[in-house]
Length: 435
Image (cartoon, rainbow, N blue to C red; front, side):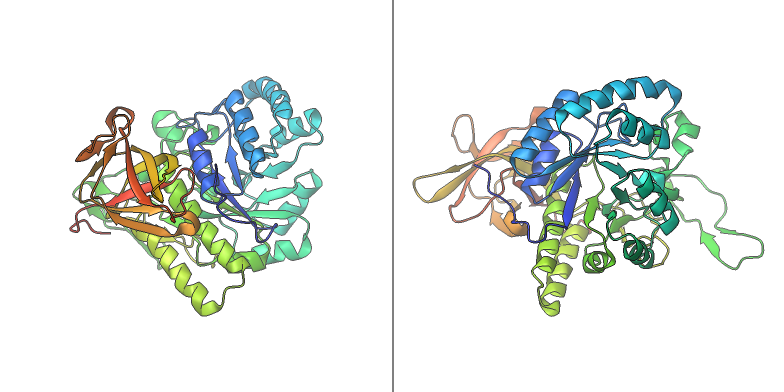
C-alpha cells in the first residue's frame, strides 16, 4: 500500500518533476511531486533516455490520476513541415488518454492543438522564451493557460507579470541543468555532429572539453574580461553551473509562481528522490508558515544535502536575482562523497515489529558500509550495514552488486520508520573524495 508523502497544504503550489520513464515518474510521486512532465521522443525535447510511447503515457495517466496527481505531455520541439501530419495523429490519440495539459513552444503546434483539441489545456514551454509582460499577454490571448517563463526572467519581472495578469498561471524552473544558450536555443550540437537540440537530440557540447591557446578574451571598448582556464584535460568554456533555488522559493511564491519545475528527464531515480524530496519538504515548510529562524535552518540543511550528495556542476541562482548565471570553467562536474546504491522494490511488515526492505542494488554495497535511506518528509535514516540478505534465497551475504540489472537484497529495519514506496538508498564513499 502506498504511503502518501504529503498532504497538499496549498492547492495552488505545485511541485512539477521530470519523468524520463515510468519508474522515474513513480519515484517522483513517492517523494512528493504533484505532477510530472513527459513525452514521446518524436515531439519532445528529450529524444534519448526517454522510454515513453502512447501506451506508456496512458498507463502513466492512470497511475497518476489514481493518486490525485497530474501528467503534462511535452510537444515542445520547433517543428518542421515533416512533423505536422504525424503530430495531428499523435494529438488525437493523446486526447483519448486523459492527459492534463500539452506543453508547446511552436506557434504552429499550438495552432494544431487548438484546431484539433479545442478544450485542451495548453502550457507554453520555456523554449518559447517568454520573458516579458507583452509576450505573456499575447500568449494568453492565444489560449495558453500557463507560461513556463524563460530562465532569464528576474524576480522583479515575475512580480510585474503576475500583477497585471493574475489569472495566468506562472511556472518557473527551480532546479537542474542550465543551458548556455538563451532559453535553450542552442545550435552547437547541430553544428558539430548534426544532432539538433531544438528537436530534442542535444549532445551537450557545452559540457565538452576544449583546447585553447589564449588566457583571456576582451571585447574592444569593454573592460570586462572572460578568463579561459585550461587544465590537464582541457578547458570548459561553455559549462554553466546548475540551478538551485531552494532558498528562493518563498520569494517566488510571493512573486506569483504557482508551479515549481525541476529539470532532469534524463537523470536517475536517485536524483528524482533527492531533489523532489528536498523541494517538497521546503514547500511544505513554507506553506505551514514555519517561523523564519527555523525555516532558514531547514533550508540550509536541504541546500547542503543537494550540494554534497548529488553530482552537479556547482550551483547558481541563475538570472533570478538580476545577476550573472554562474559558470563552471574548472571541470565538467563535482564529485560527491555519496553514491546511489539501491532502490526499494517492496516493503514488508514483519511480525517482530520490523520492516523488510527489499531493494534492487545499484553499484556495489558491502557489509559495514555507511548507508542512508531518504525517508518520508526527507527524513534521513542512517545505518551501518551489519546484515545483508539475498532476496531470492534468504541467505546472508557480505556484498552485492548492481551489474546485470542489479541483485535483489533485503535488510531489516525498525518497523516505526516511514518509508516511501520507492525509497532510495545511498552509501558513503571513502572520506578522501571531496564533496
